[in-house]
Image (cartoon, rainbow, N blue to C red; front, side, top):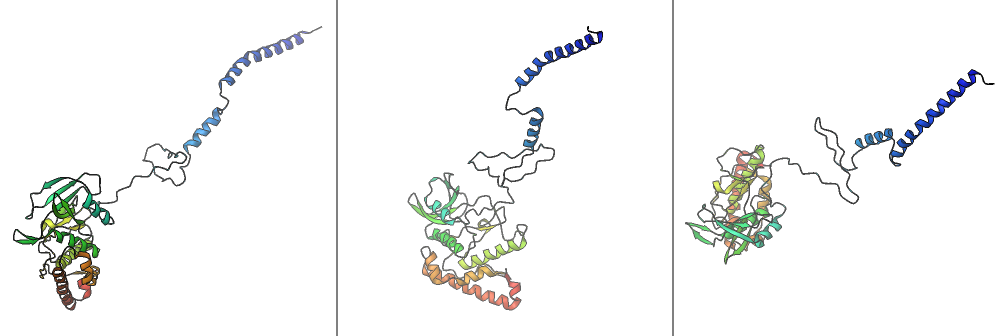
Amino acid sequence: MRTSRHRVREWYVLVLLLGLVTAWPTAGRAIARQPIDSPAPNARAAAQAGAATQAAPAGAATQAAPAGAATQAAPTPAPGQAAPAQEAVATGPVSSKTWIGHEAEFEEYLRTAPVVKIEDLPIGVTKPKRAIFDGNGPIKRAAWKPLAPGFHGGFYDSYKSEIAAYELDKMLDMHMIPPAVEREIKNDKGAIIQWVENIKSWKITDPIAGPDANAWNKQVVAMKMFDNLIGNIDPNLGNWLVDPSWNLILIDHSRALTGEKKLYHVLTRIDAELWEKMQALTEEQLKAAVGQWIGDGEIRALLERRKKMADEIDKLVKERGADAVFVK
């Protein structure tokens, strides 16, 4: 015979069983809604945290995020795909001497590139022109000088002197004269010369240009020495140019490299390295390099001017001493 205590126990067990049956469908539905390959909530949170702190691929540049900006991982390149290159960062003014290291390429371009337009220029006694290229090459514009050897405006000019001056500049490793070559356009032969972009004129009475006084003075010394060597009788405001990097650029040599023996500049300082190269020039070397553009008489005149320069330099050294004369 069951006692009241037994009946109470049976009712208690029955209530527990009913509670389990009621809860089971809800738990089953929750498990069914979770995809098989989906991590549990805690695992997913950990994975997201790991992705946020993932290191950039090996070799990728490290770049600090701006203050207050969210940290973002560098994108991983697809298999077989190179990582994107960083943009070049400008470190200072750009030089207008774009031809340095590309002389042969620029010379060939000047000789052969299509000229789409010729413009008259309202400057200069010899009436130079400007040639416009199609814009797809390393040079956009050029000075065009179809200046036949002879007297123009009372002075002897020749387009060939422009080319000879450029060739001498190359022999001396000066890199101060833009490329100049011979070309024929519309049955006219002349010198076509790279138009130097982004420059301004400089005159010798102007103050020192640029932050480095020694570097600037050395360029001015080299310019004077070269003018004397080639017998340039027409160095003036429009023929000395300065670019944003404070490079001195020399143009317009159609009146140079004649039989003139006079030295235009009085030299007080000498670029030792440049003078050594000038002294090393031989008549044979000069004939091979510029004999196509100037005659034997003009080459001998150049050598005579060099002899005059040597006499002046020797005198300066005796009076002031080598250290006060030579710029190194």
